[in-house]
Image 1 (cartoon, rainbow, N blue to C red):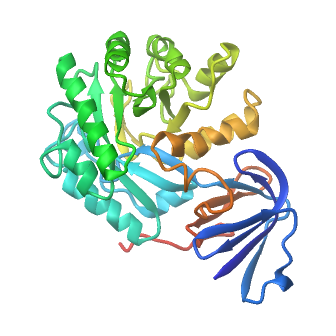
Image 2 (image 1 turned 90 degrees about the vertical axis):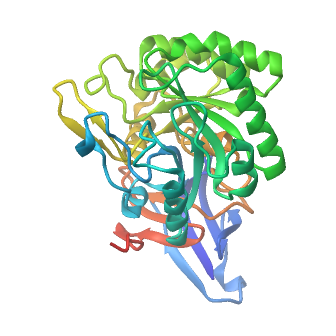
Length: 383
């Protein structure tokens, strides 16, 4: 099936100007100034995107797709995410992970949820592990998870968190070695995502020493929640100069999590410090609950990743293409799927979103199929 997205302003995420995008089945076939439909002897659907913006679909690398929470007791745990919430945030690729709850949430459930989301059209991956070592696995080892389980692309570990344990350096070195072996044999990125807790900054020096000693590429370790405090952000901002990735959580606000930094404030600091931005990403940490300062519970929606991206694009702190890159090309490269995801180019998956002139989401295309069109959701959770 051919689709022609005509006359939109394309951010690939680079600003390409007004372009036509021709899609065949699930792949981008042409990105050009003008595609003449009469020259193609097959039926074609034409979508007029004049006056609109066309962006790659958002890649969200930290979503609790089977629910999280629990810090406020059993009734603070929330349910599995509905696919409509993901689509309404403009997210076309998601990475599911566990939180600190290793009892009522399991990797088996996580894997099945990812596959269920894929059946509905989304691209979904998962991380093995959770908060603590030894890591939770599906097969008995991280290495075998990466080799044998299609959806597993990396592993999660929390450090400096009151609810996590404190591994020694040998444990971390062995975990990194498993990630590398599994990544090579499974042809996966095999990255380690580190959840930075309140005392996460104390691990910076240790990790630099480990990576330098083992010669593991810095890009294989992603530090997420880097904006949970000013001290943490200052400590880890330099990591991008070493070729590593830092991930900023879009659901953090100083009002709801005292001491945290907003993404906008972090980007202002990164720009003023002349930090390279290609190894900075955003994720939502969504479908979890947060205990607010007044002890109320708040649900964290996935749409914060879209809202914060919009805020950045409209702020002028960074060029629009740089802001878009944080949730598209950068994020796809960080999780190892940049060859197919994260940008609008010939041969890439046809994952894109269409925005109107006030940056409202009008349409979502996932692997060449409409998930939302003219503001109307077309893919819905069965229940």
